[in-house]
Amino acid sequence: MKEEQKVEAMNSAPDSAEAATPTAKGKKKRKKMSRKKFWSIIGIVVVVLVIAGAGMWKWHEEPSFCSTFCHIEADYVANYSQEQGVQGTDKYGNPVSNTNAMMSVLHRSNDTTAKSEIKCVDCHVPNMEELAHDGVNFVSGNYYLPRTERDGAALMKWDGKESSQLCANENCHSYLLGADGKVDRKKLEKTTADMEFNPHDTHHANLEMQCTTCHKGHRASVVACTGCHEHENVEVPDGWLTYQQSQDLMAKSFGNE
Image 1 (cartoon, one colour):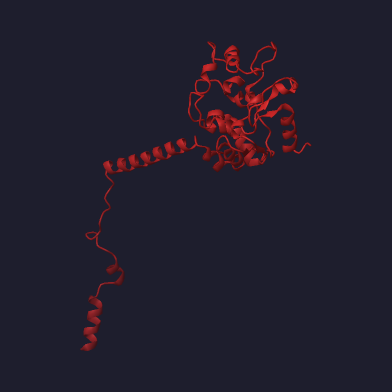
Image 2 (cartoon, one colour):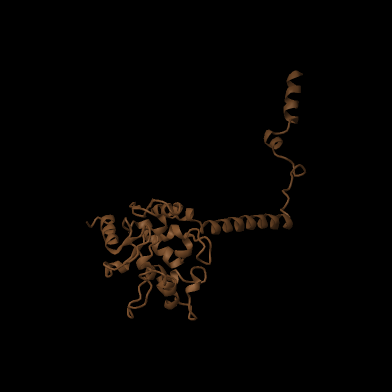
């Protein structure tokens, strides 16, 4: 009798596989995302990307951006960041008696240009072709240290402008511009007319020196006139170098002594 009840109970029990399978009635269908929710998520993602992009664009204008993405720019950013009007060092590590002799330091915060604060990108204007060129050379290690010094013509070649437009444009020394949008040499001459020896005098008819021949960005500026007028009363501003001192410094910096 007991054996019969046991068999009957086993026959009436549901199969284990059947018991584990939920009935169609018990299934819950996953709800589709509503159109409103979908576009809300897309909107949030777009806003986040826009904010991140704007932040990156703003950061790219700061000196810290240059030294973060390219370690060989760190010395230049440190040079630029020095206090004005004190003893300092140039981009090669040489002492400079007055940091104002370096245009990058002097112009960082000033009252003589149309912009009160000059940043790296104001002189080194971002250009995709140039950035790609420099980026490839940096990644491939195709460069030398210390780096060669670029003049105004080299700095402006990617934008197709003349060298003087590095210093005289709508943002910087705009008062020197003539009607043609280029530097008016007569206006430039008047800025130093009170000096006994006027370095901007145009008495050399066929000689139009670049601004960067004398005004150096990351090293002490040079009174290039002393290369020829060495025995005349040529004023050398505080921290600046004579032509010969500049030649000696460059030879030392590049190991050519």
